[in-house]
Every structure is written in C-alpha cells, then in structure tokens.
Image (cartoon, rainbow, N blue to C red; front, top):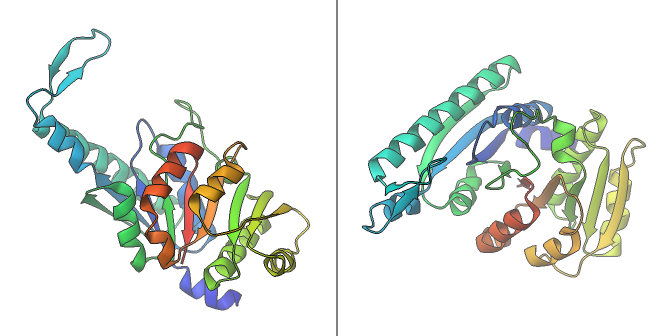
Length: 259
C-alpha cells in the first residue's frame, strides 16, 4: 500500500491568493511537499471579478492613511496582480531549490476555488489556502507543525481516505503532526483508522459523522482551533465549491484534498 501511495502522490497543487508576506507560509508548504516526496505546483488565481468591478464608473478606492478616494483602474490592478504573482513565483522557486523540491508555477483567471478544483484532476494532493490566513501575524514565521496542528481528517474507507491516513502517518513519523481528530462515517471506519494509525507519538480522537457534507464538518469542528482539514478528493466533493469557500471563510485554515 505505501509503495503505491508513494508512487501516486507525486504532484501537489497549492492554490495561492493571500495578502502580505507569505514567504514563511510557502516555506512550510515546500517542507510539506518534501515530506511527501511531491512536486510542488503553485497556482495563483487572478480575480477576474475584481478587474470587472474596477471598470464600473462608480468604483472607488479609499487610500490609506489619507482616506482620499480615487477611481479604480483595471490596468493598475492587472499590473499589481502580475507583480504579486511574480513575487510568489520567486519565493516558491527559492524555497524549493533549497529543499531540493521540484516546482512549477502558473497563473489563471477566474474564481479561485473553482479553478483549483478544476485543476485538481492532474494532481494527487491539492492544498487550498484561506483568503486571509488569520493565524499569521506580520513578520511571524510559520512552522509546519504550527500550520497543521491539530488536523481534522474525514475517513470514509475510500482509497483516497487510505492515502490520507498514509500522509498523516508520514507527517506524524516526522514529528510534524501530533494531534488528529478523525471524523468517521461508521464504526468499521473508526476501527480501521485506529489500526492504520497505530503510532505512539500522536493523539487520535475519533468522532462519528452522519454524511460526507462540508457543512456537517464545519459544524463539528468550527468552534475548535483547527490547523488543517484533510478530505478525500472525490467527484462529489468537486461539486461543493460554494460550501468549500464557506468552510475556508469560517475555519480560516488550509484545506488538503487527497485524490
């Protein structure tokens, strides 16, 4: 099983679109790709809606700190997005080179969640970051264990869920993951996950969930501090892009999808 998974989990897509200096966050994601022996592919989505809004005659931008208003300029926004994409590309390339991780980078136009899901067919692992990563303060360094703990994983006994369990066990073995909450669909899943995660250095709590529904997951873990949510990437999930966006906005933590 592990040899098959190592062979298959060889490409990781990271959907990037966040404000400020994300270098420490990208460094942690590069480390995650290294741990999983995966090629890191950065995807920056240009918000086409923002450029369309800028073309409207009533669109205004409030400057800081003067609070003056000025017309939005779609060409200026396009230049800003291009500069931001080039900055992200350089950060990814630099950290990947240091970690000896193969990497690539591309930009796309459209809605970020839908774009990432449509691109997911060519990848075995997809990481989608929230719009604003609230756990990071300006200048704060993000370590991988701070980024992913505690993790929440949905386990339904599928092939994707078994790959998720392998990834969890690998991260726990490296010492980066030490707390996991498993949402299991039935008793057999709970027994199976406990058998697969028979390691001493990680705390595992299992909880039952009635159905594979994003809103159910959010309701169960929304009031808890969550570092990472791991979901099996099945076709049914791709149709829940609206729910995924709501989950990211509510939980404000990265989402890792496993095909």
